[in-house]
Amino acid sequence: MKLSDRLSKHYVLGELIRSETAERKGIDNMPPEAYIPRLARLCEKILEPVYAHYGIPFSPNSGYRSPELNAAIGGSPNSQHCKAEAVDIEIPGISNYELAVWVRDHLEYDQLILECYRQGEPNSGWVHVSLKQEGEQNRKQVKTYANRQYYHGLLS
Ligand SMILES: [Zn+2]
Image (cartoon, rainbow, N blue to C red; front, top):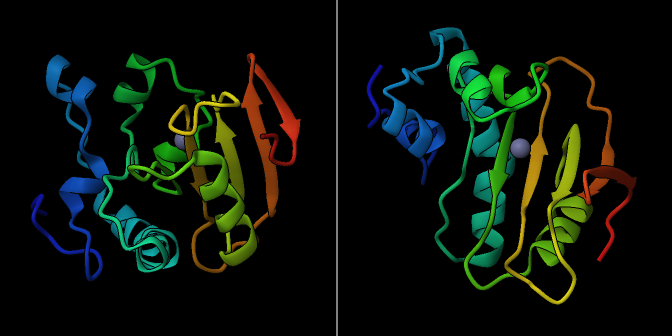
């Protein structure tokens, strides 16, 4: 597998697995080959529809995190990022709250979490979207993570 391998029309593997922390610490963040279809699914079902709607290029984060990278950044051991089932997104110039509302109302997802968003600061935080592998049931959960707590629904 190469970083330039295409996963969907607008996204290549390198964009889904790039990590500053991995680069800085020399951590290998190449996913197992079996996870490639999951990453392609995140592209087709989440990233491409978001891009088609807003028409603004953006760089997704953490489409995959190796266990070593996940530990290095203090991620939950059960993180769906480690299974290539979740991606974090932000779009330049778009409020993360607005983005989360759009995803909630238009896309299929397992968990949608508006993370670390602060009212009055449209660019604060990011939107975490997970999607179960093909054939598995999505939980359709919507949450906001703020002040180190999870809340039900999207809180602006
Ligand atoms: Zn996330």
